[in-house]
Image 1 (cartoon, rainbow, N blue to C red):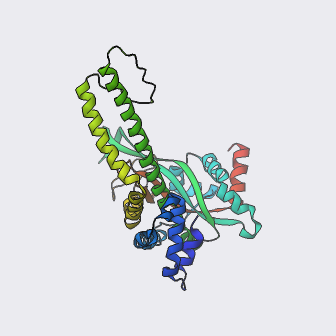
Image 2 (cartoon, rainbow, N blue to C red; image 1 turned 90 degrees about the vertical axis):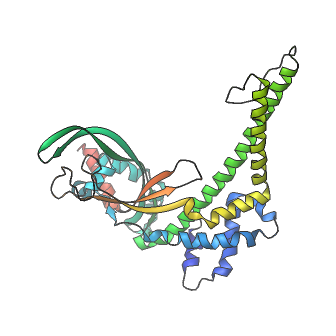
Image 3 (cartoon, rainbow, N blue to C red; image 1 turned 135 degrees about the horizontal axis):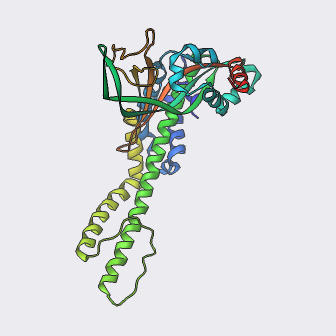
Length: 339
């Protein structure tokens, strides 16, 4: 991870001009080490690297308030009842966190930790009943919000320590996005070459009707039967392959990495969103209690959206949390007692 490097960058005496080359080298090593063979690659990547670092340095300033993960909070804080199905579910997440386990295994870290809780948010449309001015209406469209795929990351002694690590984590995420984009481009190139070989074999078989040719090439779609349609498909795929080849050559890869570093917000962004949910997870309009019990508060979350080009957006809810050894032990006793 680049956490330590970003901490140095944010330090009061850090010299960015000296540290930027090191950051470029780390990104190159994590994406495509062949870029280091290109003359002037640092000069090309340096402006985007500077912009990316400025961007990730601001990520830790956007988080909502800290949520306490304990049996008492599960009883008093309605948000935990939305995030977890039961105290057993909460305990399972805490025990499954390798990072939290490693943190508490070190005696010098103490008995308490602050961390980030990541969750997958899912919105489901359903039809239910609502009370509007004393009148019950049925078959009303409602959005039900649920949370799953929980993960605990970046456990630290204080929340300020967590915020110091967030830029490094953000840089890791963006670097991973770049690496996946390059791998996807390489895969597309291979798939196109394979498909064009299939078309070439099919055209050859049409030119020699008496010959028996077996298509053993891996392929998904069934190829057209007519020669004219095959030629059209071949020309279209050949044009796309030429584009992908140009982009997947070292010069094209360098240009793509530079572009992604120059526009980090297009591939990784954090938005703070206020949600208003009743106890069943049904989304309510802002300012409208929607039949909620008196005193029930809205759930404010920080939504992290990782964007990879035109692919579907992957969204994760991020909540700062606090947990202690004592809270985990109490949850374990509760589960053992079967209550």
